[in-house]
Image 1 (cartoon, rainbow, N blue to C red):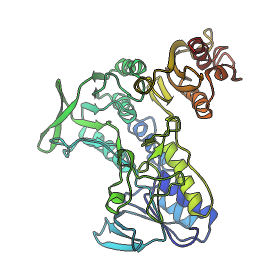
Image 2: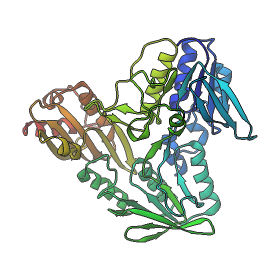
Image 3: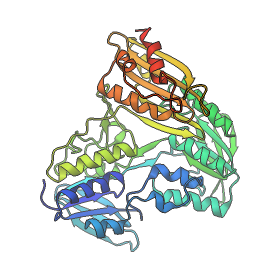
Image 4: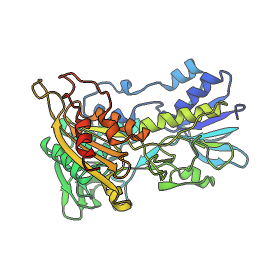
Length: 451
């Protein structure tokens, strides 16, 4: 395993992280990275902030260029090279060189698939019209920014209220567009429970976004191959530009065509070492499945934090080491202008469907000592198992300083701590940062009464 040529398909977080780890451990190993776009190792999470003008320079989103990987790490990186076929029997891949249209074949001893994910859009009329964008690569962000500069759109519609959808809704309002957002659920951000999602919906309205809830997306209206409107189950919204925020799907078709087993949501099935069931083939990042540590169920969660960790695990094992990715607890944060949003663990709607043995509490308090300037509102929701008192999940919505408190809760959930143990945590206090009782401990005190 630690010998022979490693070929990596995909040059972003997981792929380049694995390649860099292999190079550190094995200075003379033959490593080839193939990336179909022009960019490697960039922050996709920063794209909405660059589009909205909060980040000035696109280069600041790029961690390492292909040139740096070649010159500093001696890793052969070929951009504009799209892998179109994997043959795991003879251990070869077929590659399309996009600049010339010619095809080449390369052998591998070990193959890492890190092809990421793509924005989801259902097969509806007009979906290929100009002005409709999904954000998954730096190239797609460049396309949006160029469209905004050249076409000067006035009416924007965001389809879907997930993380990318909300961040892009904010970015477009910063650019003074008329922004509408449609969401088929009763509230935006369905990784939160509806009562907490309602706070986020209100935050969107406060910055001028027209929010249409419980409305299914149906189709696009198109004129001369340019999008003109978005049709929902209840209305038609004029649109000069559309952002798809309905989540992502793993880019797993290449693996499936090669007979590599897929799992939940068509993500590539891997073990904790990031190895597939096909000999000498590995997968990591947004194209790969993982497990939810609280339940053991397979999940697909496309986040940069997970991709980087899985890439490190894959690279460690590919270079002869021993590493294991244990799964996730579903921690995530976002922000809509001044309102911060965070979550970890299980939701109440999951517990309601699978167990009656739980209790929950929601409290409202302040992010800092009430007398200190800048104190803002914060709402904390906690969920716990009744018999054991074990913390099962947390959701936080509030002003500056609210979101990163979720890290305490994520640590507690991962460690299997009880709500009573959360109360006893020796958390820091000073008036500029927190009330004497931190909001998460205030919520824990209220929840323990129900247990």
